[in-house]
Image (cartoon, rainbow, N blue to C red; front, side, top):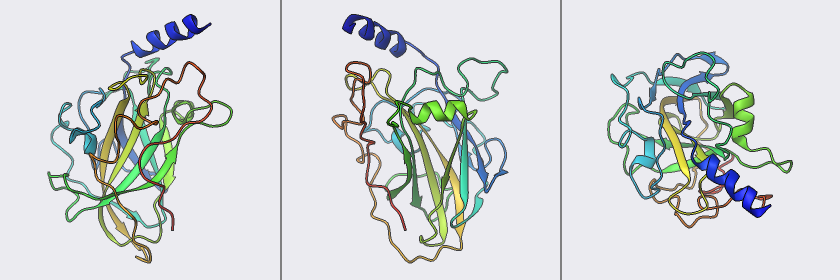
Length: 242
């Protein structure tokens, strides 16, 4: 049994079906393909959690050009829906759209306040986690639910944060080859937001990227196949709530 599970893990790890976050909805309203999103042309992962590429991608996988200069207006408390697809210019009938089913793992969303959401530099920002989904008690991963929902993931913007411009960092961590480091595959893109109507009643605790994750974190280096994982610790800081 152990040998069979190890073989399954190896086969899963050989899969090369990746993904890109490429569309955002605000309270159900489609903002348009790549509008306000810094997305690369290539769908591959970042695997070095100490690299600046874990901030918004765009290094190993250069951004699609021209980079959108749109800043998406978002009311505080709004529902956001991120939409993932295997590649840009997605082909109909792709069995790996929005991501290959072997790519099990969590989905995580962060915000960072920024003077200008279109500025090129994203280093030195302070991030706080606003949403996370990992492993359900029945063995369902967040990625399984995302696939079943045609690549869409929905979460809420906190009402108690300050108004202003922010970057949304929305991320998948695929764990099919994460039994040793580097093995986890991180997929992330950043969306450019202008949040309005926040109360500013609470100031979030923040983390930095890189720095929020370490290769030794149990949510980054883990064998999800043997023994079968029943509990999973999502990496990064505690979830911010109002």
